Image (cartoon, rainbow, N blue to C red; front, side, top):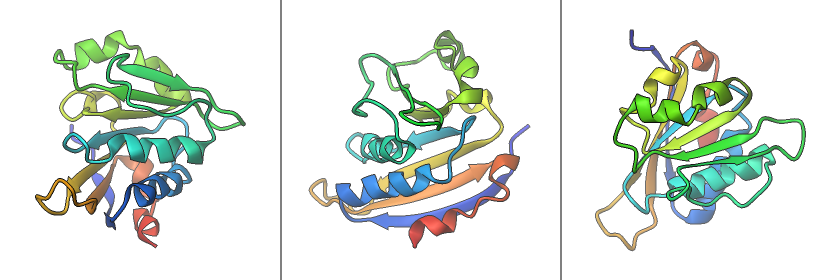
Length: 166
């Protein structure tokens, strides 16, 4: 059964610094057990957004693309949840391959961010935040991005994502 869409927002971001700041603000809305799926073409800003999430969550270690290690855990420096950053780009086996990473074990106590997770991780949780990052123009030099956030499941029923655009 498909989880219901409960909250959505669309934000225009015009620089990598603004993308990082959006991640910091989004981190304030996240809690342990949250699954965040990031979708966007190469260079769209998925890792930059995740870097801001890491800063906002107060985790240890530089948040970089986990393309070659597939998953990286950033423990909390305080009392917040750790950040598990996953790059599912090279995973072709869908949920079976994702299960090998034991993300479902980490999910209750962590914030899990999955780049390229669409069609691969939805079954991990009915409650998820989907983030689509799209270049506003076809010009690859242009840094303007449209960021669409959609919260699915009961977890997101009481979350006002529109506060992120303030």
